[in-house]
Amino acid sequence: MSNNGSGSKTFFWKTLFTGLLIMLVVGILIGYMIWGKEVETPNTKQLLAQIADRIESLEDENTILKDQIKNTKDTVEKGEKSIQSEELMNKELTKLWDENEKLKTEMEDYDQLQLQLKELRSKVEKVEDVIK
Image: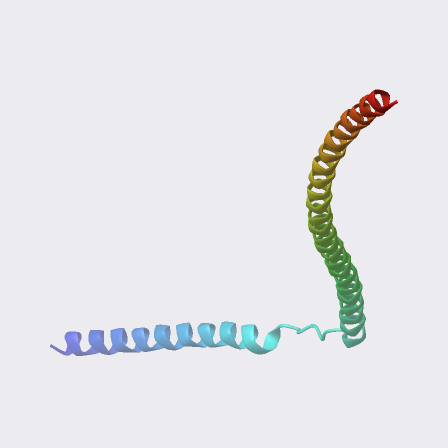
């Protein structure tokens, strides 16, 4: 029975030693991962220069977009004015067509009056000839 007791003690110490060895290796690895790596310090001047360049390019793009929006608004306003002037021209055209129709009617009346006048003159001439 004493054999079993000493065998279990050696197994216990081997297991304990192996566990401690594994924990030591894991601790060293974790410690190296946390503190052992050299961390690069960012170059703040370079980062600020990059940020300034990006801001400048965004401002340029913003200016371009504002110009495009202004041009688009101008085009829309011109289109609206063109539509309004077209509507006015259509109204004027309608007025001119109406006036043209009135003039045609008056011209027909004038032609009829001219015919009547010729007839009356010829009658007056006949009457004058009869009187003489």
